[in-house]
Length: 499
Image (tube, rainbow, N blue to C red; front, top):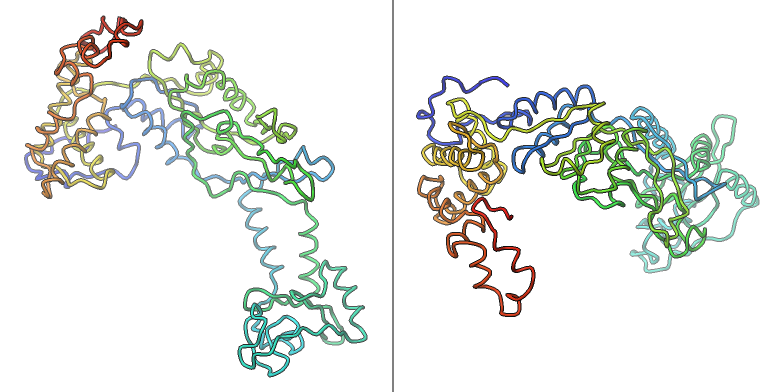
């Protein structure tokens, strides 16, 4: 990344509201130039990424920002009923163009909507819009005429050709009832069947061509959209269960019984690997997935992953949907000490089709990077939305705290920490103090007060008790003091770890 802040005098900025915030989300990532560069490559070339580093250095932000660079999804995934073998539904993938065409076809079978007064009187009466006694028009949902208080009695008698019309209407999938009326009309020298049906407070008119189109559409096997085309291209699957990650088939105590149960295709649920199709699947702490990592590997290799019932005691256990698309960019993240718990084949797949990146934990302390720190502070304030902006004098205290932490935690001189999540908490704590005092700007004293109170609990324990052993000795009951686990804390070191 460049140095857009070079030459800017921080003393000339009154507060952080004057800091320009980039619209590009990757440019909002502070101090991770190499990771940002590779993220852009991953988005353009559809490569996988493994981001390795401690919490709070920007792994999640980089993963989410990749979706800013990829095109919107172009495919919708549907599960289609299989009438010959209901437990093996089909998969249907529709492009955006096909979906538009479908909507146009559906609009063509909608017919014309007319006011009840614009259709023949007999039709309006039979559909319940016109009173047979006084001719008053009202809603078909009212059984009694609001004008004369007489019931809207529906005529059940038919003309000599009524049976013929009913037979013709049945051929098009419609029949005479209180919701629909089949009749005829003349088009030139030709007479055609026409159907009138209720549609809220209007009457829909369907001619023969429209009825034919509708009949063809109704002949198609029913389907269910499990991954819609208008979806977010970023799926967060951190800590997901097996069902959430891989999909499932809901249980129905009546199974797929046509009268009592729910058909299998209607019970299919997509997993995160399917919802991330054409997008980004982000899994932080991927090592915590354990054996589920092998399913991620299979989906990455095949770019498809089947959906099956995951509970062997469920009626969904007999249902399986094959070839469900799962073509995603995997962005995985972990800490350095968890690398050993990532499956070797999965890491090999990432390296073979992507990049492993070690995140930076500090950056040099110079004017350009100090300006980036101010950008970070302004971003945190804007994203929080509940605290005021910060004076530059107060913001410089945050910068100095970042320098102190780089020295204390990472043993780096003349550097600024990139463990920014905790610093973001410090910004919010300072803002809450300013809000509590009903001030419109976070001042230096607010940051000083927050630095005294916004401390990890380990530091508070060390301050109040001296060490963890003394704290436990003071807090525990006599019975707890004799338990074996109490002895595990006597070697607590100053660096907040255990022997």
